[in-house]
Image (cartoon, rainbow, N blue to C red; front, side, top):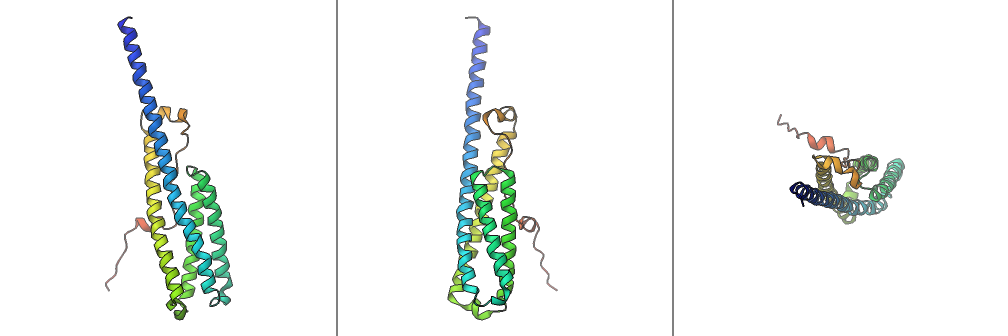
Length: 199
């Protein structure tokens, strides 16, 4: 066998090993992305399960604010539907964007409910309401943590795909579009530092 043939075989072997390694890296990062989304899904489902209990606890007090309760129920259902669609394809940027928008609408509806509840201190003091509020706050914290983990997995996956020479082979392995970050309405607020006033 000629030396040129040996060099060619070695180069082909190195290329084949690199492609196998790249395929495995991309696949493992996509699996991490799906797993990170599954963690968000668990927490959001928990949140959605708490909302009917919250509505039941407050509906006797807020009968005259029927629109607030209806808005919250509708926002919960829409967000739940978006979650199911995004769970089927966690890398689909349109479905992730829709989930973020619907979560923001749900957050807005919850904020309106909390504002309405300020007029009822006896309701806020009840044991059932305090427990529901604590569970919602705990779940919100878990959602925020899971969202950060998901966004980290998305960033890692996208970076792996966009580096040279992976950039040239990722599409061949079925890794076409970049995954999208999950952003809620509070994303802009998180980026801004809190301003304190001591006047």
